[in-house]
Length: 114
Length: 113
Image (tube, rainbow over all chains, first blue to last red; front, top):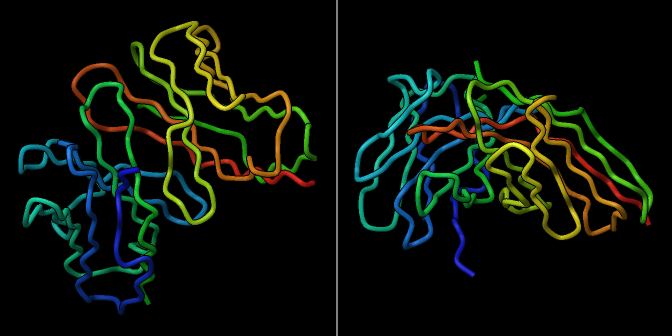
């Protein structure tokens, strides 16, 4: 069964360092997303990506964040200069369409900023 | 704004007990409503959904009915199993062109044999 894969599963970094989280969405999906969940809080939308550009982003997704689809399979989230409050579980998701269809999530990448 | 509120966990039940996990929402218009489940070590998976008022979503013995009058989408199962132990997330997606799903905090369910 096709699945969304994410790497790394856990990353520990120092404040101010750059981090790249990687995702391989399901191959025939067209829409890609990043969500995050700070421990004990809600799963929050960060950004959606379609046709090689950002289609929607939240107020959380400021200039420190960027997304890229560098090739036909990977979808990355970069945090330029990490802050303590960026510590969270980051989930990548993909979908066939943007209607009321299903989101397919990866297992998540846990980011710990020290 | 749009939001989802679900009951805090953890919820601990014995096998074959009845399960209810409450979810209420705030949204304009007619959002679509979802329950996602996350089993240990896995990503969130769609459990069921309902796209309009009075619709009932169902899957794997779980059910939830879209109640616009009470703005609720409570998850129920008549007889839980140990294998149902997971974290359950209620979510909504506004109608229209948004790509964004809005999730609750998740409710951890632990079922004891």
